Image (cartoon, rainbow, N blue to C red; front, side, top):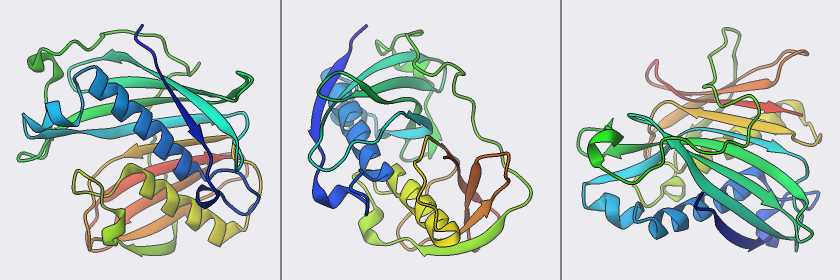
Length: 241
């Protein structure tokens, strides 16, 4: 198993009021570790540019034991953990300086064709991607399902600052919008224990999104991002405290 390790130190501008790192900022770390490892495996940005494609995150789940705080150093270990016709999976484990686990995460990715806006068949690319690998989540990684009882709580007009190197909204921005909506609606300061995001549609600069929330005492909070001018769901997110 080819494991990549990357070390990060939490900066002040990555933290929230209590000094812990924001979930979206932590996801930046995971994204960077995955991108660097993909380059090492010759499956990164430059390789995909040759076929006019790029990696997109399709599904992600993080289970959190403890969030690192400002000044903390952490190591993220990541490795590819299997692939099928369209989906390639990758795992993450974050540990502190004493090797105590902070979080673990599973993710699913697709290679998207820029011109056709469709996922490529990984079997036809003849890449050295493992078909199976060690997973870190005990219950696997199923995609989130839409609920029926959502209420609109916010609106986003996508700014230029949310656009990444691939020309669309970065996956971490959806998470930031989701937590902003939760905070604005419920004012909760409880520790986040689990967050999952299933991505459904790309979003670009100038697009307008409605953010909706469904809550139940016995369920995680569910956030739905939906295009304002069309009946198009953009992402689903669940947060457990």
